[in-house]
Image (cartoon, rainbow, N blue to C red; front, side, top):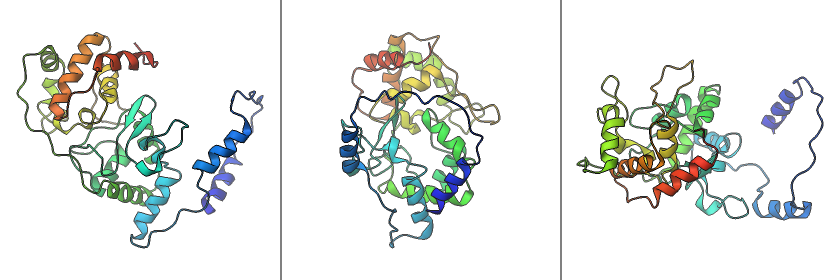
Length: 282
C-alpha cells in the first residue's frame, strides 16, 4: 500500500497535458474483461514465505510487482493469460524469446545470486551473454534502483533456477559446411578466443542464444548486432544485416546451434524470414 501511495504521489506531481482521449478500439465487450479478470487476476497482497529470509521475500515481491518478471518469462495461453503452472518457464517479448528462469533454464552456466545481481545492474557478467533485446531496457531501469532492491531481486530470481544450468557443450570439430565457413569468416575471430583475450567475445558454447528452444534471439543478434549505450563502455557486436542473405543467416544460425550442443532447430530459414517481417529494420 505504501508503494501504491508513493507512485500516486509521484504521478500527481507531473505537469498535466491537454490531449484528446483516443476512442476505444478494443472489440472485446466489457463483460468479457470481467470474465478474464476472474480467471487470471489475483487480488490481494503477495504473501511472505517464512522459509526464506527478508531479502528473498523482498525480491519475490519486486519480481511479482514492479519488475513483473513473469510478464515476459512465463508462457501465455490463447487468451493471453499467464500459464501459472509454468511460472518462469520461458515466454515471448517483442519478437524475442525470454528464457526460462526456473529449473527449465537452458543457461550453459548456472546462475548464482552474485552473477544475477551484476547482470541486472550492468547487463554483463562473466560466462553469460550480454543483455540484448527487451532485457536491455530492464537493465537500464534497474541501474536506477537501490542496491538493496537489486540484490533482493537477484536472490529471488537466482533461486528459481534450482537445478542450475545445462552442461556446457564440449568442443565441436568444425564441419565443412557453408554455415561453418560463414561462422569462421564472420564470428570465429572474436568468439573462438573468448573474453579473456583482448578483443575476444563470449565463447558460443556459453551463449544462451544457442541453447534456447528457438533461434529467434540469435537471428536478432546476428542481424542487428549489439551496440551499448553511448554512456557505457561495454563490448559491442557489429550487425550483419547488410552482409548476409536470409539463406546465409539461416545456415550460420544452424551452425551456431551445433556449438551450443542442442538438437537442430526446425526450419530456421522460415524463422529468419518471419523475424524480418515482424518489422525488423533492413
